Length: 177
Image (cartoon, rainbow, N blue to C red; front, side, top):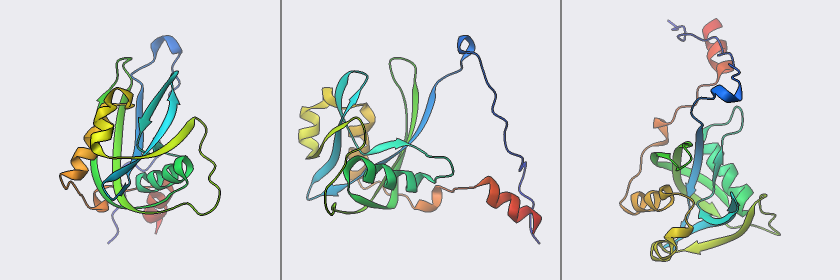
């Protein structure tokens, strides 16, 4: 017996005028890439500052969270990345009121082959130890950067099965068969 997915209609986009905007919430995917005790970080321009961050970014339409982490790692660093575990989910609100919900993954990586073209805004790629990150704490894009590394070093690993991707199309197709 097939169960019909609950409420399978797509949500409508509600357009608000800028004077009545609700909270600004960003869902992002990030990668912890570790090699010999050093972590892959990008140096990037954000709001007029140079900051350090794990390879990370927003989801593209129809993209799963692990796939977004892999894509962002490649686009920002040239490194291939295959997520193996979820390290954690991090909820942070910055000083301007913007909220970030970050899904951070760890996994295996492969070095770039050939010339690397870094994503727009990325200035450099660095391999830093935790101690080096701590020494440059004022340069970290957010407190999530160091917290993710600390959780990774503490052994936080969750199965990728805890992050389920449910596409509207797949659910609708299942409901009709």
